Length: 416
Image (cartoon, rainbow, N blue to C red; front, side, top):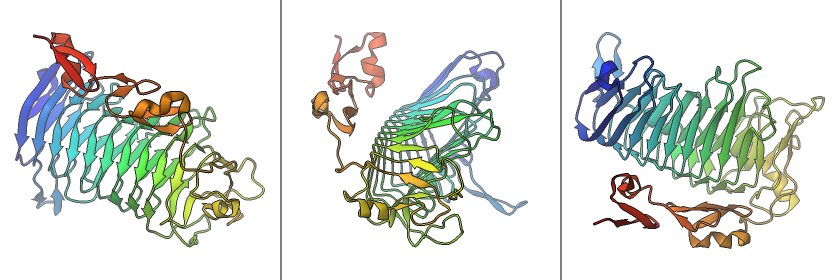
């Protein structure tokens, strides 16, 4: 069904419905009511097996439709909550032109969507998506794509067992300024894609436009990619040294299958876990151990001996080895090709673990992701992971309507 213009003029809630077996979009939400910022809430939806593929006899192209389309045309915040988007042809959810207000997606699952390359579980274009506590898995054409975004946040979610182009692609719109791409506290595992497991790309067109990215405290493991597993690219110098930051990530057991080319166009003789295409990315406090790849870290832009400042900050990481010759063999930089920058990897961490003794070792309710920094399990909060919440349970025990209170990790005490 279609919701457009005046049907949600003063805000609306669409909930508790099944939308299945439609030949085009299961739901098309279109809102272009000027001057009205009332929120729209889509929750408890089951959008399944929509968008049957068909043949366009005029163009001779196969036409695909999508499970859920959100086109808010810059006018209002939209929330997608506690929904199952599964088995749809084309993208599971397609979001476009929501750049003034974010689309917030929470506690939802995107599964088994798509029939060919580029059909993502969740695809957003020129938007500001905020994705939290979601599962994006087993999609045919890719997991999560945030294309030409004004801002993009993916937190506390799982991206797993996807095929297609990319498991996760975050890209910033070239006219956007001072926005950030954020990937934090996610599990990205067991994906098999033809390009990159994770691609982060900032493409500012003009010098006075600045972008930022933060990739922090993620677990990225057991993925297979045709090119590098992780790829970071930014065109311009950031405003501060920490604007392009990759820290606290666990990158284990990944495999990149292609022989990678360097700046001369020749092959480097093996695959690489991580590719960085600018000297401004700060890469620190990460744990890397991907023995199937010849190199852990690969830089790929022209930066010859006469250039100034051709140094990549990649110190205080664990490289899978403890001795200098072994670590140097795992990093492709000027040691291997004089036209590449220098990677400053020393000092390096000597073991693949951090300590959180001052945080009570996260109280058994989380993992130590950086020195004295805990990544808490679902339902736990605080520096020591001793505080609890019930956000995954019916709007926190339905407390706003007298339902009950949260008394333990995801445990409600209901009122009589």
